[in-house]
Amino acid sequence: MSTMLIDYYKAIENSSLKMLEAAQSKNWDEVVRYEGACAVLIEQLRFKSQEYELLPEQRKEKTVIMQRILRNDAQIRCLAEPWLMQVEHMFDGNPQMVH
Image (tube, rainbow, N blue to C red):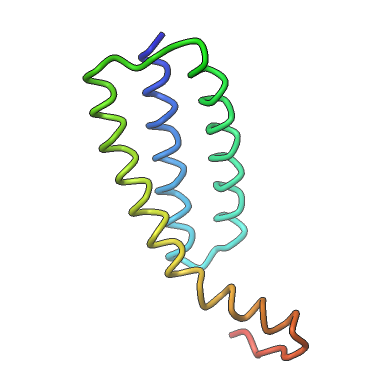
């Protein structure tokens, strides 16, 4: 069953990559959709990891996967920052033109 745990990490990585691709194309609705998928997978992983453990070689693979997820997340944040600033200005009463 530990194989199933590593599959959750792979699925989370896949969703994070799709989030990045959506952010690169400025499709923020898709970003949010994949973010929701990641949240569900993370919760499932959290539940399953209480029952099972990764094998030592899987822990190494998990580390590599997590590093890629973090890189994807950092890139998404950089891409989202201008978008978030526009939303913030809208709430400040200073709406900006969105092209």
